[in-house]
Length: 440
Image (cartoon, rainbow, N blue to C red; front, side):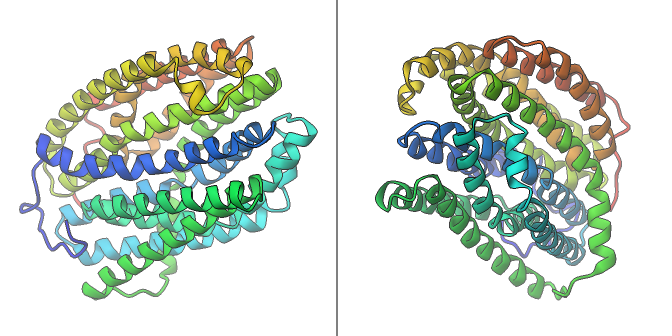
């Protein structure tokens, strides 16, 4: 769907399987590109001497936590823009999108200013060995330079998704992924820059992706006569609306960071296996999240148009899709389980622990299918306050199980408890009607 849509609230596309797939399939490709960045980095860095792979895992976990708090720039913008499209006001939709872009740039600069001098301390929180901490700090500091570009990519993606366009983000993501792979291989293996080369390759790829989104959004704004100047009240409103999503995401990051820190303290083999397992889980999570992206766009649009029946119908269909995909992904992990350690050139100690954990990665895929879909639907509905409270509750449920975990398998079992808690809280909310708020 083109950026310059003028569809009114009653003239947009439907909410059946075809519409879900129209949005979800391109979103799948775009979302998978992000964990593929990390998978590619892991494969290339895995060729370096130990503990380079573990350092990549620690630095990536820290960076993901920092950037993950800003995911509201994509999710909140998608919901806000889609609701205005459903209400038949594309000019207002573009205004909210531009506010999100300005907010992304400001937050990106602030992240560099705050986190650059704190990088060694951030890495130390994971309890890494001296050499691992040194490499992780190098990767983290270089990666922080790409934060403004990465956040602009998030906001720009949110604008286009809200406009019911998931094809353009797919094209940008695939191009960025290919460029990232080429640059990483060249810098790390060709030029011998080590783990620093991996970070620089990703930063450059992110910067070029951000430039493409800026061009697309500027063209759309001019087409609809929307000013490109920063609107301080609008930027403040975008930041305020995203606060609840920040809390929800902070809870998620606490879970992921806790798991990484505990795995690091178990030993170098454990953190290496955990890093690979996390990469695989993230890859599958982003694939399932493609349906959630469709949920954000469809829910925002149908509620903006005042059509709660269509919202309910689309939600039921997407949950079925989520469970079915989760079953398929789980079976795929089990089938590939003996071969996956070899892909990462993992030594025997790492391979043994990884193969044990992959049983749990496979088992919880259908649960993840429900969780990600309902999460996306409620974000699209603007139900961020409930998501924040649910995030706090489920994190509290997770932490005791994680702290007492005596092995990597037990740690991943605690992660499964967290996923089950999320499924229960989200399902209870979706069954009710409080989230079905209509209008612009």
